[in-house]
Image (cartoon, rainbow, N blue to C red):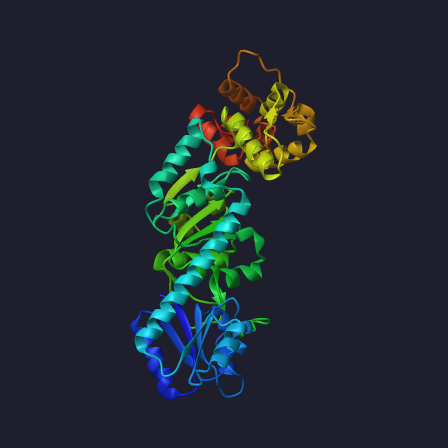
Length: 451
């Protein structure tokens, strides 16, 4: 269903055209002048059909003001000159009155289909520019293979998904992979970084606002949720939402309804929600910073992404794939890592995960003199990374799990959970999960009883 504005000063023609388009399943608004059209916020429509001769200003004035919304011009003065002039000014097409109903229906259908294709092409170009191709997912380690398997199983459904992982682990890439394999893949994936908006902006950006709803709201604006109607909405850093925005988002998930800021009526939406966070939402719920009912609505299906330091052999495969992509993009010959460069990549703890790996490799490709990336080109301070942890005697025969158990037991009385997790280079959630898996008593149970 498309949203169409009809600008026609003859009541009989306006009413007839509104009814015709309504019967075709469109949402249609009729007005009599350019001034009235602007009162209805011309940027919210998918198509504007306007008479050329109108009281006040001509219909062609809407072409520039409504851009990029296409404008179809109609007139009873069907001369070649007026048609050419309208097209020169940017009209998407031209139709003469009195028009045949079938001709109008076919013209509107063709314009809307072409507009949709153009939007998709723009989105595709933007995606390619991001250098995050869905087929660029590299996974050999068990945790990542499990995450991809879960993504593959949930993708064809409309189930809400919560993707959790540290910054830079590829949460948005997983969301794009889910969308690309869903029934909604022909529509846009609307991505929203919840951390990018101030508290007083987020509701207007997500839900839209009516004209005059607040100071500066000079015209009606569709929110990003409404823009995602019929498609997929990706809410990155969902833990950053204000409490008020959380309550309104809950209504979207429960009732599939939104209400623009300053509006009295609700709007039905059909949106699949994918959310992502680096935060521990369970802990935020316990601390009173995140709504429990919203958490359960979001966490219908959970996917956890491991940090890069826990992906083992994936690191070399990822590094090779990124190196090939970067070298091609900046027009360098085929390149490779030296053995010492590989060792440095594996020794570094990667606090910024895959995103940091990409940045390091791009910098190294620029700095490298030949076709081989040397350790010096990476400029990784692996020694500093190692000394970030307290000095601890580690026997060579200990496994990683043994080391983890010994480290936690040794230092948990003098450091809190956040500090322990930071020293180990993992999240508090990872620390908690490892405690459960390795049966390590918590700090509280390790405290000495009062004397």
